[in-house]
Image 1: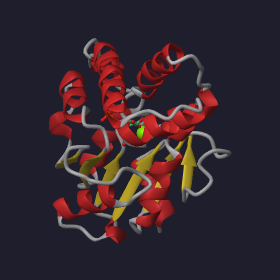
Image 2: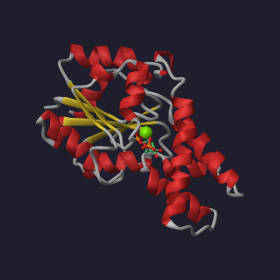
Image 3: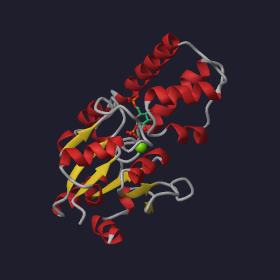
Length: 216
Ligand code: G16
Ligand code: MG
């Protein structure tokens, strides 16, 4: 039976995906090219260093490790400027209601984010206490689509993969959940999240009861 729900952060709990995109786009623009919103789908759930490599390849640039470290730090600075203004108003619609249903159903919760800034964001929006376990970018060595982030979440809760449901908005995140052996709810477009077991536009469109019924 399902015992735990594992949530991605960016795009599921808060819309920081837009801030990541704005900061990466600013960096690309300064390097002399642009990145589209469609291209940005490839960066969702992917670690900071991997994202930079994907962007530089897109722009046809080959840079030294030193320069890359500098650019990643610059992007993070711009990103943090945007994030530091966040409040509980930035929690996505439906999240609060869904979490109260999760608690009523007696389910455990974990955060599964590859972002090193995840704890800061949870503090900003006042949701640190909403999670029984928090796995962030400082606790893992491989970003999504590697299953490590969700495997660690289950491990920290002392649960088996078959007892966990993952909520993800990114292609790489859905793949990570599937590779971890978990039921995956994709939040977003069915055209993008083709590998998810169940797809809804957002948490607002779902109830805990519905999800548990689908897992069977
Ligand atoms: C998030 C974002 C990615 C970002 C990554 C690393 O992952 O979706 O776009 O590149 O974190 O973030 P940071 O640069 O803050 O360490 P997730 O797993 O929360 O979707
Ligand atoms: Mg995400």
